[in-house]
Amino acid sequence: MQKLAPENFINAREFIFANGDDIYRAWFRYHFEDDNADKFMDVLAQYQHENGGFGGLSDEFEYTGPCLKCTEIAIEFIFGLNKKPSPTHPVIQKMMTYILGEYVPEIGNWGSVVVPETNDYPHCSFSRYRGNDITPIPDENERIKNYSPNEKVPFAALVAYYSEIVPLELHDEIIKYPTQHILRHWDKEHSVYDFEYLLWLVPCLKDRFLADKLTAILIQNPTAYWELDYTKSDSDYVHLPCDSGVTTPDSILYPMVKDIVDESLTYRMGQQCESGKWPMGWSYGDSEEMQRLELKADVRRTANMLVKLKRFNRIEK
Image (cartoon, rainbow, N blue to C red; front, side, top):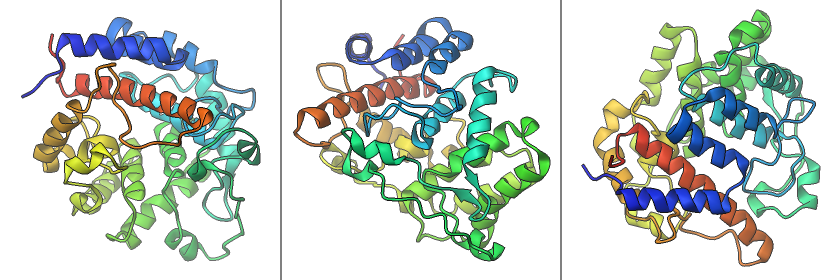
């Protein structure tokens, strides 16, 4: 099995440290130098605002105030740690307060993940604020049917992960909508985003019987959501099996799709540039502002790629 050569690893590290901000330098140090979760959480805390929301973590916009999108990225970091931070950790406590405060029970979900101020700063067109439709849905069955996992289910996943600090009734209410949506309404018409985001939730559920039922549904046809012509990723935005779907051998999907995950990971390895980075394969735009955001995206992809390669034992010692 192909592994990343030492010189390629060094080039990637140098790219991250030359172009990244504190969070991705800390992410690298945590995974490859000290395994010190407390030190990483200290750096993550620098991106948390007083209300518990995070800012400055997205590569899709330059607004650094608190928003759900950046808080989602903070959750991804927390889920990527080797050991679960204590529920009493100040970062976790404040984050949960923010997330629960943003929850809209009248729709059984969260609203817009970006705020109006996002549009006042350089931003990708797909990350602009488009309004916040939180029109109440009186019927519970309709709330379940209309549940949107895309960019929202990570907050439910955190509620499940730290259920001990969430009031039981509220926990059950929040978890009901994504889980019942899968049980009643899952089909191939869902987007790749719906599919991959729901993979965040299932491992966090304390009810293992329910988790197994949801897993059985989600694994029925995972390849329907991924691009299996890997060459398209050279110049287009596509989801390969190893991208956001299966990022660790511990994934609930990996045993069923091992071959294509391993193949696509090898293909991604070959896309590394001489600079050490793993590029997006497509562009945010030609303006100076978009190029700044794109560089930030390249750092994120490169750091996460190294972590992924480590998890799959694909880095040469």
